[in-house]
Length: 270
Length: 279
Image 1 (cartoon, rainbow over the protein chains, first blue to last red):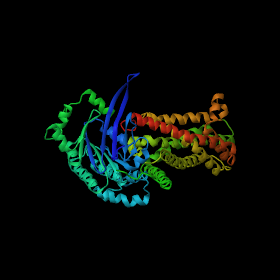
Image 2: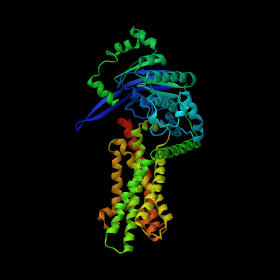
Image 3: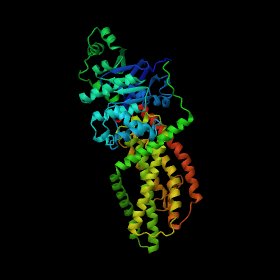
Image 4: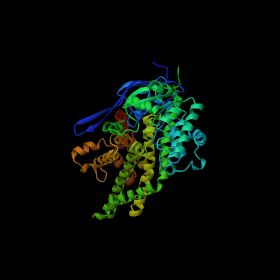
């Protein structure tokens, strides 16, 4: 087996939903996806809603079981050695997801306990990590429901980093943020790359973000990984100036194309 | 080779699990603090509900002593109903609340064992349930003026604590329901609570039930909890072995069965993508 930080081979995930009383409709969210990520590398996976990005992140987070293929994180089988993998991975998703009545500090403490961090440790580390993500100390004990989306996403980044993950899964971490918050989050991702021994898988539909932050860019379309290369190699391969043009040539669609019924259904499934 | 040390010694694993257990209890304390006024309103509702049952004793044609005895029996039934309700509610929230908040994926991808997670929820449920049960008991006794000079509260509390092990196990089985049906799963937990109490003689002796229901009553932990606690409160009886051993046996089976059922539900949810907040 590969020595890569992340090694995914022929990964498949099919979802089914009831259609009528006796029928079920099946949709492949991931269809034979294979790739590797080296330690310390940042890889961005681009794709529209429903392309399978979140399914990929959920599989690597041990939140889904596959229908085929395998995935290893630092040599550990994601599905058979889930506990070992869980110690190595953390995640930031598009929804910040917190206990809304609890404060940022309380939410972080709760998350940290599951990673073996006692009260003394979190008491020392939480103020430091919140300061690093630019979260004001005066709002540390305020209920999450009173914070803006941008602030909540900063706390989500702090939650992921608090446990010192060696693999960070970022699932559209800047989607829905205002331009300033988006820049701050992107700046922080860059800082993680520079200062931590972290490998990053960034799923996004922001092509500029992918190009700026990642060493390699992959395109996931309808559950299939069409390519995974450095941005320059993608442009060279398609003979284009931008990743957006490469997307069009690879899929025959633009990123903003109207969704078909199949796309919309896929979005619900994946 | 991109190797990372993932080997944890037994002591470190145990330490991490205990910290995880503490984290679950601590989080519930935070939530109780934040929802204190709502919880207080819910407590008032429980007291009012118990009063509606206990007042039945004042409307029947019995001597004052017999009325007092009936009131005490109904009160014990009402308090156990409320206690079980809290246990089932909190343990079921293992999934339901986190799903609603959207935190469930973060909790389920964390390196803490599911038994520790569930037992942490159960532990908090018992502690919180005991405080609420005591408050309901004291409030109703004071309001109606029930006379219970011989009550052995220590034995009653001890029996409730022993029975709680079984209740937590059954709660674990119902906690899985919101994983299968995010919309209706929680309510099904209350169905389990009601079914358990109806066969256990919550407001009446088990002997009045049809014979087949009496057979089911034998495997319900609530039967022994209700019988033993009534004896302790009314007659000052201590812990009776005939009530304790069935509770120990049921508890010994219910926790492992609860864990197996929950794990199976978790596996189903991971297979079908049900952990996702949007369902």
